[in-house]
Length: 313
Length: 302
Ligand SMILES: Nc1ncnc2c1ncn2[C@@H]1O[C@H](COP(=O)(O)OP(=O)(O)OP(=O)(O)O)[C@@H](O)[C@H]1O
Ligand SMILES: [Mg+2]
Image (cartoon, rainbow over all chains, first blue to last red; front, side, top):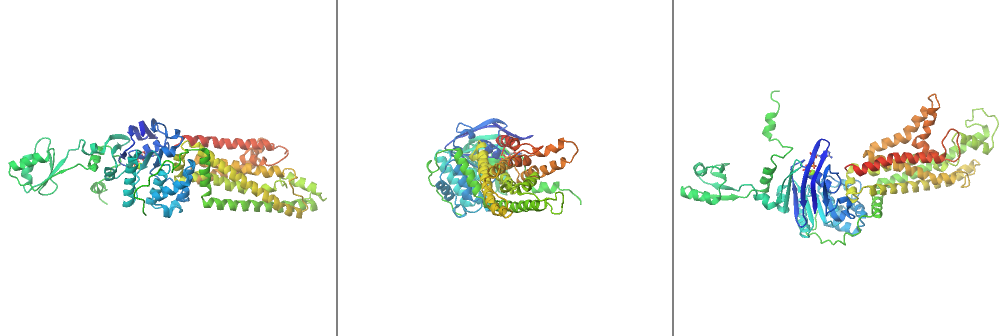
């Protein structure tokens, strides 16, 4: 259980986290989603006390992280940046961390096997690929068999097999009653892994709800209609609260009306309809919708860049 | 790369349930210290070099004393004293110029402080450089036990290495000095004291190095400041002594390397602080660097 109350972090004039309040509950996977620079990593660093909050508090299982007598058994954390000495072997890195809590060497070997690092465990961590480094970070997080797992973009750099493994692992651990707090850039990944979502943008919480609610909450379901008489049907259906887009010929995307009403109207007016498909809002769309005003670093469309390029020569 | 698809069920017992302990943190820091090959090679090299410099010093000082006895001067052509000296007179004359016999076991100490001081800077600055510090401070979130454990590892390694090097140098110097008719033994005033105190000095420099690395979080910066403090500052203050007026002559003996070096000597020297005052001054220098380092480590984000 992670509880943040009015948690804030400023770096000089820059506000990274602007007073957030949220709870991450045990027994489920909680996703932490937000655009670049939203404050996800900063929030996670504050949970384990690496960064000192500018205001507010955050506790893990009822206490500040540093006040626990067995921090590594309370929280296992994988943070975004690499946190290993490049000249030390993966095995010795884990062994040194384990020693602080008198965790036996057998557990070190166990997490090495679990993360698939057995063949490279005696090699210098500095030579690891992105994915291997990530596996080492996950191994370190699992070392104390912690009650709470904090993973900052754990699938970053992993191969498909590794992604699947992380997904199964976090679900399994949540099923065991552990608290899992997971950030990711891959919204589709969240849709498959998380039970609950906390959305953050510019340091503020935008949404905090079960994933199912976010998927249909507020976002109107659309219906795709294919008909040879697209413009006539569009005219017939048009009205207040209804919006109709046409991206291809003979295809309409209609929101504001459900499929049954559209079908009835088409039948009444003898318009042939050869496809009628309700489209569920994807998490991706819900995400863009919720964060469109909160994105700090907009990527520019290629055309924008081209048009803003200096003219003449 | 394959991973176990189904995570093996882990029991609380498999991961242990002891929790954080200072003994564990100490063991962790020792594992970190010994698991870097470069560190071990550097220590071996340092040991050999410190003993080598000590042996060289024994030979050189023996030569000087012998030449004093035969010609009455350190330099054969200098004809200040025409008469020859006894061994005791020659030793006393050499000692007046700071060339003593009892200090031979510590003659290579400058090298020891340079290497172990730099190693101490690296011990923590490299953790900041690589990001390892985040793993360290996640495992030991109160932070200070990790700093204390690093300090203990450094103090023990520095002290033991210096002590053993001094003893070996002592043993090697016996036959060399015997060749010049000089008797080197534990019975000589200052020998045993010097052998046991050399490591204290080096360990103190290592603590200063650790603190500089903690304050600056940068290996190169920390080593530069350490070298400035121990090698440039004494040189600079010695030049100050040339400035007219008495005040400037006294500045030199208060800098850390001179005060720490004085701690290893025995006996009174005119216009110079006593050895125990040197020791206290050196301790003050350690605290001046260590206290801000500890406060910074505790409060700054990592
Ligand atoms: N040590 C720091 N000093 C100054 N600014 C910082 C520091 N760490 C983070 N920031 C700023 O705080 C904001 C939040 O950063 P943070 O790394 O928490 O975002 P994030 O959500 O993890 O982003 P990403 O998805 O790119 O990992 C950013 O604008 C970042 O530039
Ligand atoms: Mg991040």
